[in-house]
Image 1 (tube, helix red, strand yellow):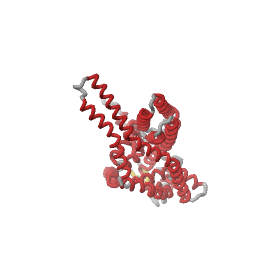
Image 2: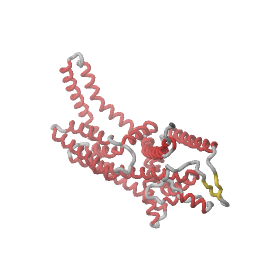
Image 3: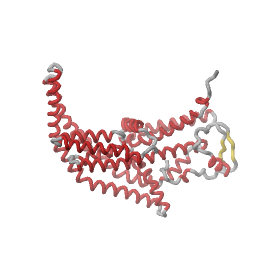
Image 4: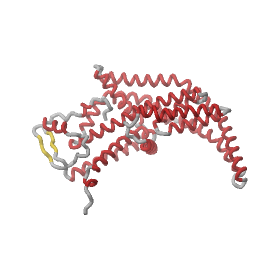
Amino acid sequence: MAPAGHDDSVIADPPSGGSASAAEAIEKYDPGDAAGYTPDAVETEATPTSVVTRGPLSQSTRIQRIALIIGLLVALWLALQLFASVLAPFVAAGVIAYALDPATTRLHRLGIPRGAAALLMILAVIAAVLLFALLLYPLVVVQIGLLVNRIPQYATLLQGWAREELTVLQDNFGPDVVNDKLRDLISGQAGSMLSILLSTVTSVIGSGFAIFNLLSLAVVTPVVGFYLLRDWPNVVQMVSSWLPWRYQGVIRAQVKEVDRILSAWVRGQALCCLFLALYYALGLTVAGLDLGLIVGLTAGLLSFIPYVGSITGGVTAVGLALAQFPHWRGVAVVASVLIVGQILEGYVIYPRFLGDRVELPAVWVIFALFAGGAAFGFLGIMLAVPAAATIGVLARFWLRRYLASPLYLDPPAA
């Protein structure tokens, strides 16, 4: 699919050798008139010598095309199942190429060769990531060390809080409901939960496969992204040439709609996550929260999942504030930072950068992200939003077809 703002001429021309009549028929066809489109309409096929008129598709041709679509979907599913663990760098490279294609096309129109423009864009992305990492790396390392050193303190505080709450419950409901053995067991388990969580995260981060995936993302993704970005117009033109002639207009119209929604969502969510991460990191740090930088960045970056970033950041920040500050004033300051962030997110940032242009409901995005993660892991999370946008566009297309069909419009028989 071509990103928004990309020159669509690479997918609008009919194949060479077509006659002028066929080209004019294709150009006059309105692909957006999905309701009036009938697959069985008579069409013309361009040949090098004449224009041949064909009637409706035969039943065998329909069956062949349906079987081909089903076979392609099954092959794609099996490929994702077999190679999900190694496809992440290539999918990330495709996302980078899709996002950078409009800027690369503008540089190419200014006279810079396509390869050089693609290389400049990839180097700019790498430089921005490295600069961001070098500026934040010392602060993040310090806060991670602080978190590791405070795990025993947080465990002790959690144990004491659990023991006090269970004592209150025992006084209110009697020793028959909450006995001493249950109280000691729960308080001990509550204290060990943080240690178990820390050891689990450390083992996952330090595993060889995680390190391999990180290295592959850092090394393979820029290389593959450069080649995809350099050849993006040719790839789009090649894929467009594979479309069946009868359905080219309709397919291209739906692809453009998916591209419009997806590009708006990606740009809008990237800006929203960036602004929220900067606000929460700066606000929680100024509020005096020791781990405010990590909590703020995490809350902002997770904001692309509706409500997850806000809930995760809010619960973590308030919990750390209760453990750190001896009085309620510090907790109130942290809570006020979170409340102002929610107001900015709901009434300023999201309406400004997303608004009603993105036809992706929050519930649909949440389901797609969790379903993709459950099916294919990290690869599924990266593919979830494009798949959700595609399914949404196709569902609206078929709904328009249904509402304009005799199945919906014909009145019931008397």
